[in-house]
Length: 120
Image (cartoon, rainbow, N blue to C red):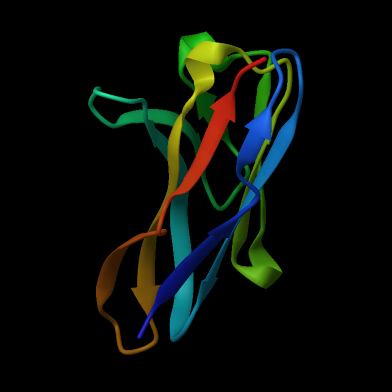
């Protein structure tokens, strides 16, 4: 069984920083890609950032230059460093991973979600 566990959310003032982590565990052969999504209050879930196993990254326009996605393949962990946070970044953040298991199956895994609130 595969599990994704997130950590690192919280309350921060505008202009502050937070770092989210998401660790995958279980019968994992490979993960590609890993992504962060977020769901602002009253809105649809939206894609924030993507990173491939080779390290290629992509970001939504509103977070470019402020957020950095990275991963540690040895630990099956993805990170999201968020700097210069704005009130509009307030949302529940979810990690997502496309996982291939040792049994040859594929699993679309989601973390449990972590709240990020940007407010003075």
